[in-house]
Amino acid sequence: MRETEPLYITRSKQICREMGMDPNELARPKRFLTDEKIEMKRKEYSEILSVVSYFSNKLAGSLEAPILITISDAEGYLLEITGNELIKSTVETLGIKIGGLFATEDTGTNVISLALEQGHPISIIGEEHYHTSLFEIACYGAPFYYKDESSLLGSVCIMTPIMFRNPLLLNMLSQTVETIERELLLRKQNRQLNILNQILISRTRNGIMITNEKGIIIEFNEYAEELSKQSRNSVLGKCIYDLMLTGSYYKRVLEGEEKFENEELKFTADDGSQIVCLFDIQPIYENNKLIGAFGQYRDITDRYAMEEKIKEAEKDALAGRIAAGIAHEIRNPLTTVRGYLQFLQKETDDNISELFSGLLIPEIDRANKIISDFLRISKPSRTKFESIPVNQLITDYIYKFLKSESFLYNVDVEIEIDPSAQNLEILCSREELLQVFINLFQNSLHAKRDVPLKINIQAIRVDSSVQFIFSDNGKGISSAALTHIFEPFYSTKDEGTGLGLAVSRKIIESHGGSMHASSDGSGTKFMIEIPYVQQ
Image (cartoon, rainbow, N blue to C red; front, top):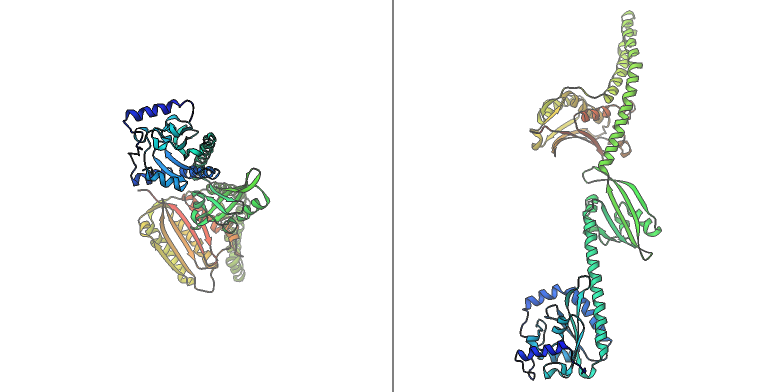
């Protein structure tokens, strides 16, 4: 016993007397949580109980004295009882169990309610208790807080036979509680940091992939899913070396601690479109030790497409200047030569006249056509447009013309018009669009294999445009050639001028549309999109 009893114990005993408590009859908790509320409370306190139990058990293990440890919430409801089994069974027979509320007015002077009330470590030794049945018990208690908020969380208390009382027990309990508070604060900060990281990772419009030091994927955000078309769950825990286009980069970073910035990567999406990304990757260190790699994609497909358009525009401008020179330097002399050949044709015998009409004049006309096509690439179209329903454009105009051509070359031409696109109208020049399809038809003829040639023309609605898909089962186009087929004078045919597709794309662009091609080696597909007239 202490020489002077602490004032808070004296006041507590006074409350007991005022409540009419008999010191010779042990008071038990009168208020209890229901089983459902106990479960909810323990779930709410699960992390706290885990931390407190861990360090409390370490404290119990370091002591030779038999002790009982209790953990309560901030109100005084008992949430955990652990320690010496003999003491535990004894207190349970006294009605002390999980879910009971320890308040002075119910249970008399007790270490749980006083520790919570005083807000600092306390002890109640032997006769300092109000009830005589507790005179042979020494109790030590300490509240614990979230240190950053100073918000009371609960209490940790020790009960031991009075013969094992020791002032050091209160010091050890205080140190244990400080350790508990630091651990709880650290976990809270880590949790908040993790939430912040998740917000940053999920909100960014960059694809983010993080691996550990072995290349195992530990983070894969939503935008990475969108870019790669792979789900987060399907890649987490797997080695990035085997899964990704970027596996070789991660290998070099993790094994050689290299760093890469603005690496341009291209890959093809499921719909056949090309995606272009800039890729950055760097090692992650902790205490100067490599612990992983952080990589991110930035989608620059739109910017890349714009740069390509600028390059195409520059090519067109150059072609325009060249075309103007060609028109001036070549077309006029050709016209003169053609006229003179026609004049000479009348003055020569039949054999020479046939040479003029069958070879010389047609070749001059062919040269003139090449010049006209080239000029068409560089000059804006001034053709008058009209609004035409898609169904009418294909069936009454394009299909009729190609059908007659198909009889000559034994080609099977099929059309498919999606119901959603039939009645849509596009603002166009029928003659120019027909020229585009004739160019594609002629290209298909040149790509014909030993099997019968089949051509399919589809029209479907895609967002605010009509997409025309012209496909064949010909030889196909190599991936290397696909990147150049719309360039002027590029041709895979020995006698081709390389202007047909360049002119075709120019026509489509003059209609406010776009034209692309794809090939899988067993045919070629051209996708043409033209905006439809909004009703």
